[in-house]
Image (cartoon, rainbow, N blue to C red; front, side, top):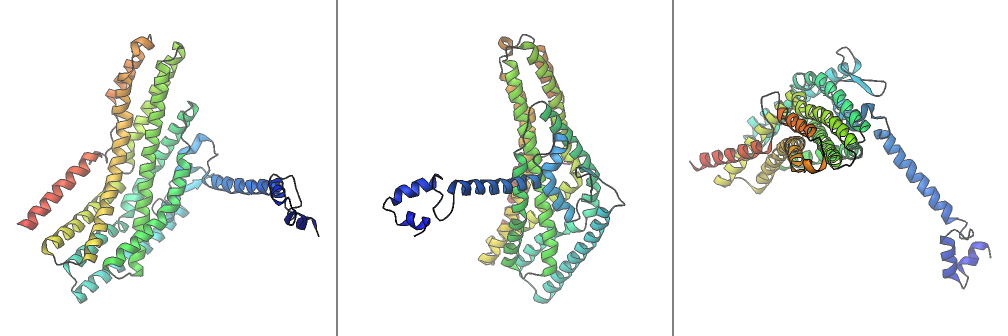
Length: 424
């Protein structure tokens, strides 16, 4: 009987198992449990270190914002949306004569061909089949969304230099906050996970949506997938950036509040002066994000609004006439819900970021009892004057201000108009 058999057939079996679990016995099937657990921990640490190295968590703060958004930016670069060039693994630039631009042009030609064939198949099928009204409305709303493939050079490519400048500005802002002792590095892991999950979820939603009211076509699947994945990635960049701004605003406000009630008044005044400079930088990147993504976001908003209008009109009309089937209702509801939720997320993220950096920041400072805490209250008065003079505001280069009220008011007015038309 060998050593391992002695443990299994020993009368003190429970004691031997307990002793083996603590690593005191090495003869339990020839395995030292302590060494095994250490080996597993090393393997797990290697896996996590590989993931962190992949998303570049441990890089210096010189290009922190770029490393945070890198997974999403690479997805858009692979789809020919952002033809930027990468230099020294951290510096990005836009060059018209570059490999990235040549790849973007070839990819644009391919997706344009797929989109044209999708439109051709749609119109020929409608003429042959003489489809129902709800079926026609569904495909018209989807095709209006796919038309974004045609205008990529006039939206994504023209906005690429602006986006690169904005990335550089955000890198400077995050570096200054990092030097001030304010960090928000946890967002990097969240963005990496969202970038991985967004693609399969988008494709799954696309297949379910197109299976409801139509037959799947390879050309249409490709053209629709290009638009859907790029818009989802762009939405994640938008929301993640504004969430980053909100987090930095909260950290900065907490620092100001601690400085006001600090006993070291000299250090408190210096801290508030630095915080005022950081707030000006934060307000600038908040206000310029709308200008940066102006062409892209405007066209996406217009296509989403057209899809929302067509789908909701088809759904309400089918309810009034009672001609459509349940399958048609589900398909139109999916399109209307997806477009409305996307529009709401864009406007809600902008509304909360502006509110956190502007109005709520100012209200929190006004609520503090400055006279009893800080002898020199003039420095905070200058801070409040700065916030009042330069409040953050997000709009698409002056064309459209982004907030929650726009989504609610437009939706209510549109639903009222559709109900009035159908009743009349």
